[in-house]
Image: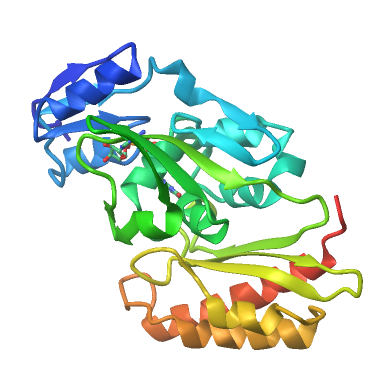
Amino acid sequence: MKLPAFDYACPATLAEAVALLASRDEAKALAGGQSLVPMMAFRVASPSLLVDLRKLSELRQITIDTSCVRLGAMVRWRDIEDDARLVVAHPLLKAAVSHVAHYQVRNRGTVGGSIAHADPAAEMPGIAVTCDAEIAVVGAAGSRIIRADDFFIAPLVTALAADEIVVEVRLPTWPAQRRWGFREFSRRRGDFAMAAAAVFYDVDAAGQAHNAHIGAIGVGDRPVRLTAAEAEVNGNIVDATISERAGAAASAAVDPQSDIHASSAYRKSLIGTMVERALQDASAVKAA
Ligand SMILES: Cc1cc2nc3c(=O)[nH]c(=O)nc-3n(C[C@H](O)[C@H](O)[C@H](O)COP(=O)(O)OP(=O)(O)OC[C@H]3O[C@@H](n4cnc5c(N)ncnc54)[C@H](O)[C@@H]3O)c2cc1C
């Protein structure tokens, strides 16, 4: 299908990109085009100016330091897949990204594009919320940091202002002994999640879990933490009974809508199973 007419700019600096975005109400950033171009083809979006970010090489870096893993906005899924450091530095991220789409899309789709697009069934926003990520953005008024939990508002709606660019997603550092699991159910490999669970917790010397984080993807209008399920985990040794209880708490905590893919009741049941299985995987993960 033919795209609507638009102007195109390919700035060489971030400052220039911000100025271009601020220059018109209907300007939009272009990353890999994996969501924006289909939306334009279907006339869901008709930006008058596309500001292509592909020359901004500073947004393509994955940096790992003592405080966090920094994912530049133009880092592609393939870059995460290919980065062997992340096996230790953020195994949960790596596992989640392996479920994103198909090879061709993973070759172009980006971290910043997924975060800004804010599909509630997408893996990266779910990982950002589960892991208490910070999202660094820059706009005409300057730069700011937005907590992932404050960033996602509704499907395709975020806290990002029209002239702001996502620069970086910061995931807090990952202790070596951390237990984690990621489970997703979709109709076919590479489809968006019908429901997915991202979980991690730390264990003390007695084997009891603390700092449990349990995130749900695809069962609401944005990714969410499931605090009732986390409460079932904290203070306990995670075994089959605790995993089952946490799964039941997860099911009870969500109220997904029915759609053409699944009924609300099915998704509610599914997220419980995903949380239970992810916790069982976590309890079986050997320390790195
Ligand atoms: C067939 C198919 C299957 C897919 N399956 C999955 C899946 O299973 N899981 C999943 O998570 N995703 C999936 N995707 C989405 C894909 O992973 C892309 O990451 C996502 O579409 C974002 O695309 P993009 O990075 O190319 O951004 P674009 O399409 O270029 O942009 C998307 C939106 O973000 C804005 N934007 C882009 N970059 C920035 C930035 N740095 N700052 C501010 N705004 C920005 C754009 O203006 C636009 O509104 C699928 C896509 C396709 C086509």
